[in-house]
Length: 116
Image (tube, rainbow, N blue to C red; front, side):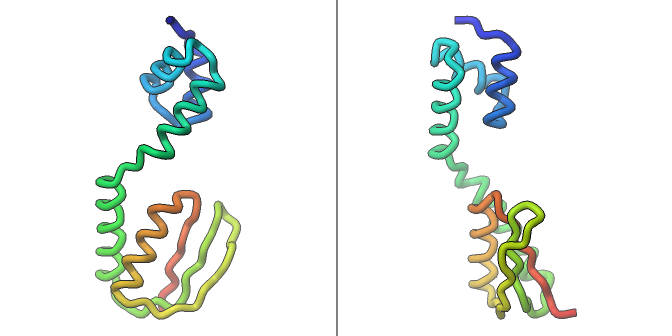
């Protein structure tokens, strides 16, 4: 089945996927946009890139450890809105957990505030 560009663009905009992924999902769904979106959503929720997450986590942890200095507070944000500020003393294990949380919760931003 052939799909048109505006429909592919619609799916791409909604799911933030490639042209190829959008086209394949639409073809598999016989052009039904809702079905294609549901298939892509399911694929994205189960298709976790563990290698990429691990590499990103290790980079974050390395940066935290190299920066040195005591971490005095974590600020959890969703977009520009601060959800919570948490006073904390972080060890290397804590730095790993913070990095993991930041990677897994892609909609959250965690600011690490150090003593000056």
